[in-house]
Image 1 (cartoon, rainbow, N blue to C red):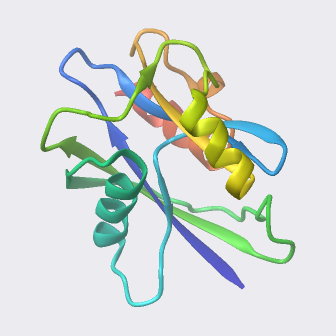
Image 2 (cartoon, helix red, strand yellow):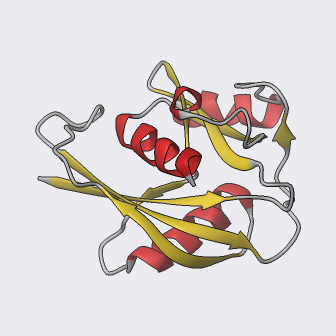
Length: 151
């Protein structure tokens, strides 16, 4: 079985890179914003939907950056292989979602979301000079972070 994930790389005007800090199934992860492809959905539409759902943010999906080219077992679904697709994205409006300075700095609303769903997330920018594969948690994200760092 395959799980397809679609992620967006968003840089602000100063070159900082947006990440999502998430608490999922009892563990902390820092990753790129995005999520799972739903049946009947294209990858670009998926990414637009995910940004709208997670950040209430309209984005334009730009160039394709990377698609997983190695085997990666799912960390959450035994027997599933993950295929992740990454695009550059551009915000079409100011970001309204709360942005944090500190990793995993969840506010009261986000903590209530955790109580209700067992998952929560918040967002922050990382300065490009400080950004590396060490800033993200997931193996495929680390590959993409190295690609961003090289550019």
